[in-house]
Image (cartoon, rainbow, N blue to C red; front, side, top):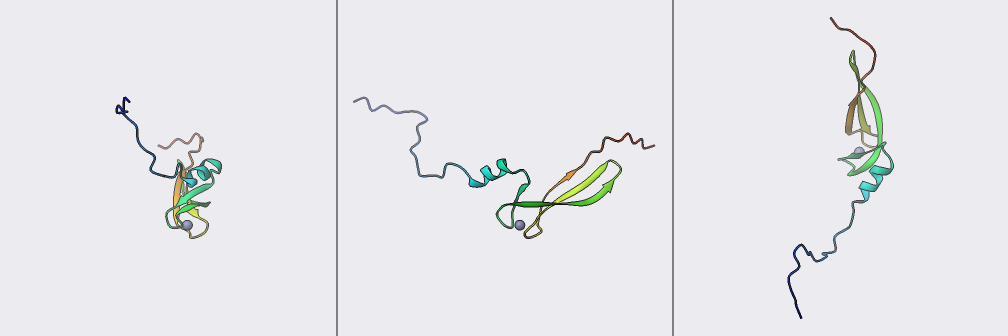
Length: 82
Ligand SMILES: [Zn+2]
């Protein structure tokens, strides 16, 4: 009796609960997702540019060499450009 509708109720469709790569990423920060390998791979830091404001680094996949990210080091040196 009383088979009322439950708003917001969604039947389970057998979806995987979580992405396995998401666990990897939270465990090891040095692993970056590589679009070519389609998984998180160890990243190699490579100095790309040396700028007065900071060094620019590029992260490359250690397996295939695809660029997986980059960062700029902000050095706290008191450099006054005139
Ligand atoms: Zn790769």
